[in-house]
Length: 450
View 1 (cartoon, helix red, strand yellow):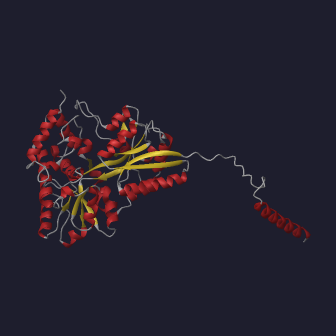
View 2 (view 1 turned 120 degrees about the vertical axis):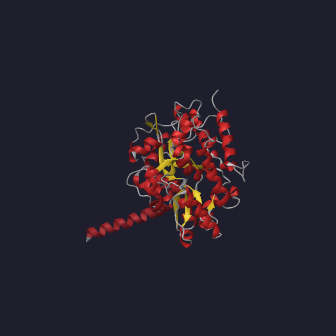
View 3 (view 1 turned 180 degrees about the vertical axis):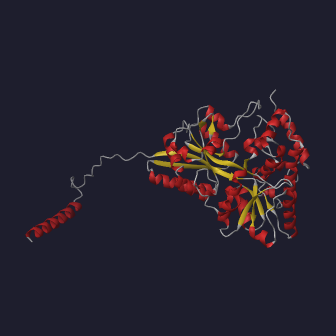
């Protein structure tokens, strides 16, 4: 009992002493800060560049926040620009200035010059690697998290791994409103004749068949990719492109003209009026609100459409090109990550890419963005992908714009690996597909090395 009383007395005295000492602001002993022999970790910035795309930006921002929680020594500076040409210039500017650590290219490594392409334009990614601006990832353990075949096709150059594609997307098809199709007894078309009949049936019901985003120009290429994959050289794009360089194929040959003619049919007869004034960012809302029955778009917009109307029931199908049932879906690897060799924080960039490549993190990214995964045992986490697109993955072909190797200084009507149907009337000056094709061939010949 005495022992317990003594302990209680000592505790009480300790409390009183502490309270009195706490009020004495001039007491040098009590005001002395506690010593901490562990120095605070220095926070370093990882500079990341990206293009503006809401669903993907949101997914990356979430990953960045989680990464910073686990690795508080890093802060990710996530800079976004306008997509396409603006972003391409931003990549060049920041990388050559050694002012970026990690960034994704818009697609996988585009085709580099071959022995039959004299005077070919060397793609940016190849110039960057050849000039020592891109880090070699071959020895990084996280590379093994991905399918070896996908890394070989989408991120390897001269036997070394320099890039990690975040996944792949379909881009040669159309989203369709299932309610509109069901209410009007319509089915997914598998041939060009069925596709034409589908559009005519919609017009007969006073329903606008297709939405295209012509204001930004580049989206007009998307449906053309599936036409090219089926029509050029009978479905052998690589052979057709080699023939273009060797002079055995021409841009105004019948198969190439047929691609333009069918795009003109789509644009003239079945697309919403004034489509050249519709911006790409408006396309998902146009579709989600039922103003069109279909939109030509890439599968990267699945989650954007779902955000516009979570209750919308929709699917996706590849655009057919002939009376032979369609057996291909054009696509590409997308958002291919590069680490800058001479960036201010290469170590941090590698740590971020390692984190991104963890299967549990990558799974969340795939689910949020609608990408088709290139890691094994990763689910898409998306009903539209699972029900309509995954079945086409074994038949997916690389889109024309990735395969095409341009001549340097080629004319505007075939530049940037494009089809350029924006030049067809009524939006452009050419009244027929053949007129545009003839100009394209002249520009190709004019750009030949002297």
